[in-house]
Length: 113
Length: 116
Image (cartoon, rainbow over all chains, first blue to last red):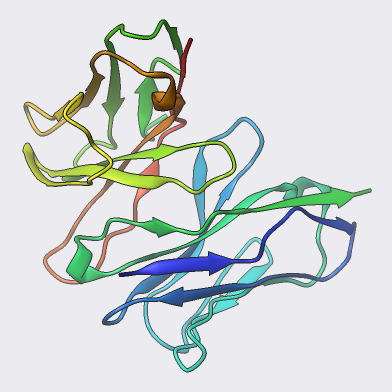
């Protein structure tokens, strides 16, 4: 079945550091890939998405590229801010599974000032 | 605010009681999803509706759980005879599903259930 594996946390970085959160997936067919973010006390928000191989999703300085050859969708940001502290979820959907989202277990990110 | 709303935001109940949660999707969204999230885990799919039809239910959804979307707008999720293992955040999401391709789901703030 479809599944998502992401880097375990927590991840603690200093402000302005470079961020990478690894994510790999297993899926039949051609899934769409997502990163969702959950800020403290708030609901899940879509951060970025990519719907086909080699697509790059980007938002708020974050980027992720859909790599079919390595079945990966790593999240990156060049310079993190304290306000980026949150839990990040890698996820996928596939048309064949009626678009229900399969989430990874989440990575908690804390940024030190 | 035209996002997905859920009510209540928090619910504390005693084991064996019934609880009901409500979700109001973004207007004109034809799909509505329910997920459950336990501490330290990602959300897990429970069920979804296309308009008023419930099209899929996860094996996580035991017989004590029932969901409805009577007019294709808001939805309710009821848990009967609650157990401590039902304690979790219950998330609702909605989307506009087109004939081709996958849809983007927008999540509500969730209802946190604590069963004592």
